[in-house]
Image 1 (cartoon, rainbow, N blue to C red):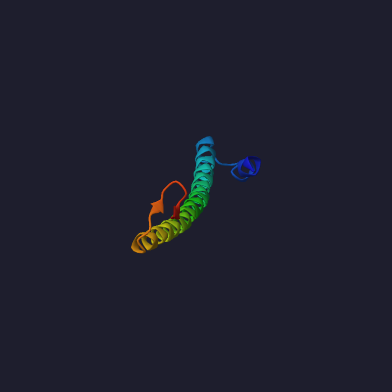
Image 2 (cartoon, one colour):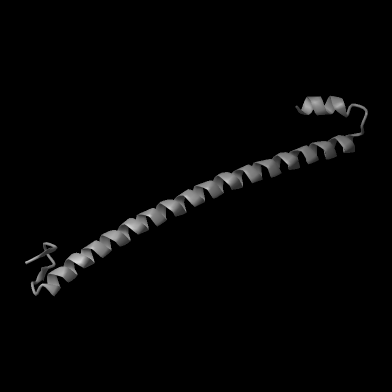
Length: 87
């Protein structure tokens, strides 16, 4: 690729060739940066989504456990912390 560019700018001076290669390198770097950011962002969004789903499930389990405890206490029985059951 560099050889092709070198041939394209065969009549140009060394400074022009160096600038052209620098512009090409900068363009590739920007393209890589944009791609990398998109991949990073997609991974970040997926992680946040997975955490939210786990949080939702944990909240539901806690709500269910609290309801079982409250039902036990409201019925006048005692909650056994060791077994996690009403006695």
